[in-house]
Image 1 (spheres, rainbow, N blue to C red):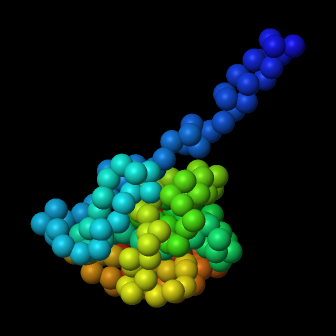
Image 2 (cartoon, rainbow, N blue to C red):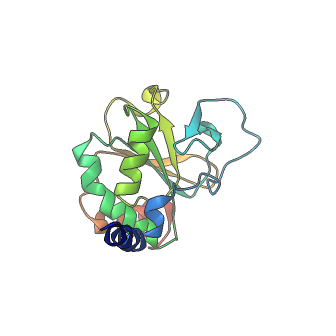
Length: 169
């Protein structure tokens, strides 16, 4: 019986996707190191801090919460965009009950981009109260477009990335 249980554990472990066991790294986030003042957010995985105003693009900055149904609806489109590796995506988990809950959600939904934590709503004044919000940030860190509400299709997301950042995915 113990042997069958051990074999079952090995089978389950070998069928778990590799990305499901590790947190997306924030080391890949492009920033301007000269910008040292502003809103400081922790990486959701607990391995770093970032000054929000130092973020540089081209990038999509997506503010979400696991409790937000429209956020859940757009995640597959963001995942598809991320798999092209042509656009930097950065997430901000807002108003979550804990970083652990946010990370569990990230891993369950295979969100392979870096995630920042905003449990204390430090960015509320910047983004407002509702989520999802997606900002399109240029290479200088300037917001060139902000979409309030979810993307309804991959085509809609793809078109916006082309229009506002000049990147074809």
